[in-house]
Length: 153
Image 1: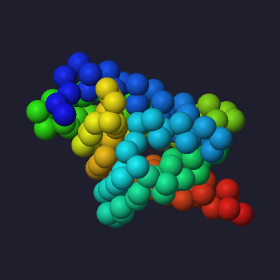
Image 2: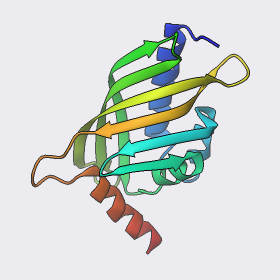
Image 3: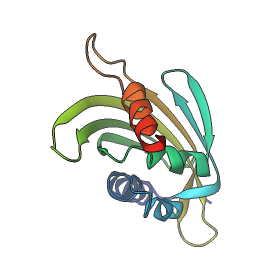
């Protein structure tokens, strides 16, 4: 099923809004299933190549309760024939308690979209590359690893 460019851009904008609000809360992260195919495969290319399924990605997304990750799409490219989108995304990681900026980072993300069997679409494959942090600045992997350690005790 081919998607119109406008449908892809609308879907991606709704996705970024949802990820920035419901994905990171363990009580609401399941709402992201509206965007993810059951067969979702996420490949992270930071700090090393890691592949996650949908359940693993939802767990990672909601395992940093002290950090708010806001995703702001700077540019979205939609390829309706290929059923894909690519985005240049600014990530703002802030401490929830103080609202202090912990890290601002740029990502590129590529999304393979599939029909949801109705009138919409879902993300089947997601590839995420992240810029390196400047020397002396925290990196996203360490921030999330430290947050996960706090969570698991």
